[in-house]
Image (cartoon, rainbow, N blue to C red; front, top):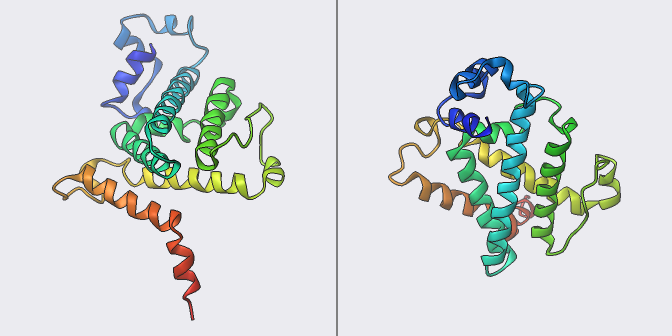
Length: 206
């Protein structure tokens, strides 16, 4: 059923998915669905968790094959945004489509582990380990380190949201090579933060 759901989401929106639609795809009675999953949301959150694991594996590969952490961070951002652009419904599913997703244990653990990996990529060592009780109060303990992680996470999601819409409506829809244009665009944004261009600009205020 997970494979069938991912197949459907290649061409259809999450809003159009239903147990009846999925049952028709796999040629079973709708009641059979509940022999495997308690609800449609449970199935979708399992798929989201699957793709957080995919993301973690890819980020680990990028880390192993990059010359330094700066290169690894850039390649991770490019991969993340390209995933959102190529699989917009899966991206939406992983990041905010289902309310209260963090109450689902496997989703919480895999999403938290992916954030932990991002922090390790930034700092070069394991800053913390996600636990079931990790929450806003940990911000005070970890200070600026976790703030940088959340800032990078927000940047990843914000940049990805630019390209989740149909390519024909995106900011590089008329470019001769949209993917190459997107990479150059992202590289410029990341350099502005990594190289400190923004503080320099703000410091130049009269």
